[in-house]
Every structure is written in structure tokens, then in C-alpha cells.
Image (cartoon, rainbow, N blue to C red):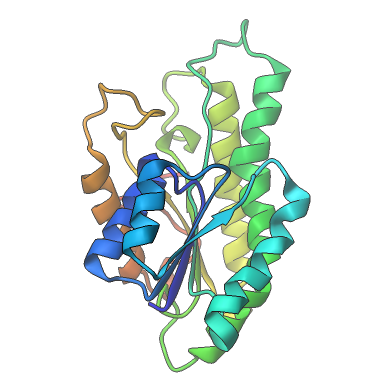
Length: 244
């Protein structure tokens, strides 16, 4: 894989993906986006010249187009093989009586609107990669968009209620993923959403059963094995298909 862009790469799963990709030499060029790079991400960039940190505030939707020339400056006419919409936010468990409109709108903006609009902005370089590598099968080695979702976005699996802002934003992201998979099929761009599992991160908390390394390795192994028939699917980090 020649190139991958990961949002929210300064910590948690995003940083874990960057670490894994650099250590395993899975990508020739890695674009790590975040609002403010962590010291750990900066250190990784110093040690790996193929790691490029790009400033990106997902609440500033009008700035997304600025990323395209920065990718092209590095990749030339190779385009972008893989976009991982990883960045996300979550409010704590929210009962109906306590939910606030501000929480709903904030979660929807970062978790749903931003991935859709960033994918739209990066379509030129994704299509460029799909055309440039037309000798390869549809998938991450050619061109793909992976949206990090959550089992909490599954309507069928919702047996607890609550979590209105996060559940609604991830269910909407799942719907967007399905539409993207249909809209981009003609361009040979694979689109799928992945649930990373319940992971020990700032969002997942210390009681989560999975560590970052296990989740990241499972997700990236799954992503790199996806084929054309997997486009539009909702998958767990280990490749198991999940119900909508």
C-alpha cells in the first residue's frame, strides 16, 4: 500500500494505527491528521520520514480541501489508497431525560458530518489512486474508505437504550457508509465501516477488555484483506460481520 491517511492520529486508536503501520512497514507514506500533535506522534514523525503530520480540525469543515494539495505534494499522481475516518467523540451514557441538543449536534458533526465531507474532499486523490492502480483488485491496495463505527450504532443490537448522541451519530455514519459504497462502486473504491471493539482508550475507559494493539492489528489485518464483495459491510475488528 503506497499511502494511507488516518484522522485523529494524535492518540488512542489513531496513534495505535500509525505505530503499527510504521513498525510493520505496511504503507510507504502515512498521513496523520489531528488538531494538535501529541509528543508521541511528533517523535514517531522524527523517526519515520514517511510519516507526515497534517493539521486538521474536523469541526472546521471548510478547511478539508486544504489537505488535498498536501497529499499530492508527497504522492504526485499516485493518489491516496486508503482513508481511515478514525477521529470521533462520545458523550457519557445519556438518558433521554438528560440529553442535550448540544451533545447531539456535536457528536453528529464530528462522527458523521466530518467523515462524509472529508471523504468528499478527498475523492479526487482516491479516484486518482483507483485509476493509477487499476491492475490491482478493489480494496485497500487500490482505493478504500474505512469509517470507524461502533456496535453502539447497531439498531438491532441496541438492548440498553441511552447513549443518544453517540448511538445516533454512529448509526448515521453506518447509513452514510452504505450509500458511499454504492455511489463509489463505479469508481472502484471500496467503502466499509469497522467496530474496533471495546478498547482501553480515553473514550473506552480502563475497564475495556481490549488493548489498543490487539484492536489495531485486527482492524488493519481485516482492512487489508477486504475485497470488492465486502464493500458496504459493517464489520468487527476481527472481520466478523455485524448487524445493522
